[in-house]
Image (cartoon, rainbow, N blue to C red; front, top):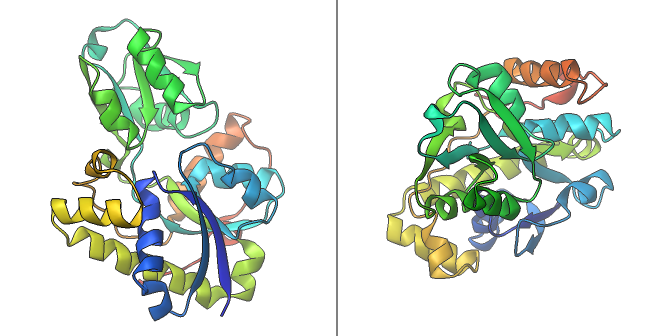
Length: 278
């Protein structure tokens, strides 16, 4: 049995299907072996581990994939992920002459603004703060008026007074988050990759079928999170995985080429693995 090596963090809700599939025997049902290393926070070494071939797959936003390619890492996108990226900020954001947003230097948000949000938001400037905790502090101190994050950070930000969700990435008919695998692993074990994603889909369906209280119990038991953190995800619903869209692949890549974020162009045939038959 071929083993898929992964390094993820237990705080990220998108890791839950991996944890459930492993602990509930769903991977075994699909004859998939997963060696899963979990960190306890969002500060972890996943990118470096993927680039150095210490792991076989990684999840992230689609810009990650193109940065990997640009750095010489041969990989392929194997599926979409549930969209969780959100913009949260002060409630009077529409009245501001300029909206200063705290974002990671790399990542999707500038692409979102240029492609989808330029008519929704006031004139927007960026404050590059790569650490989410530091972005949250900057918002609370008034240094910025909005920030980009995912859960569990969104719930924490909304506990600050006069804040709201300004925009959610699931509001557009596109997906810019993904799983990707090392290309050589896919070439050697294509069915293992397909079975891995089928197992994740079963695990996600299992979670989605539960009541809010049952979801909290599952997360507390299997992710080893305390009740307060687990409760953050009580209403979380996983979106179905899909083969990655050629249109979305090209749209993101062309923006990155035009803004000089990357220099290497990858065709969709080179970059997208057809995991699902549908």
